Length: 177
View (cartoon, one colour):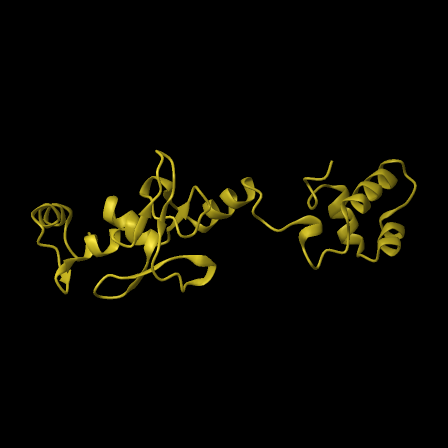
């Protein structure tokens, strides 16, 4: 369903220009008029209207409700987003509405994508982290060489024994060699 129409009806209305309009301008044209298509085959198409949503995402009034601009762009070119899925950015650029830069995915897909692109805050970048990468290396060496046990390392670094065990078994701080 596209904006309340079955696929064949939507395609017919889209091509014959009879989709609902706001004022004298069709909704699709109103939408694309707010997009700056940067030159280049792989360049982003930037939303140049309201970006009042958190994270710099665009917002668009479709005549019935306020929508995220990248989701609206996806639905114009593809299909409605199924329940439980989000529209994610391949380009990691929140104002981008280019359909080829967007893909549907679950929360888990979005988190995996963010992790793979190193957009997740981890390690020393976390404001609440008590350990540095140098501390982690030292804990692992001390453990491997049998210099200290979990309790001794926990006391020395001001963390719990469970934290030390997770560091040693690489349940945390996996990226540190």
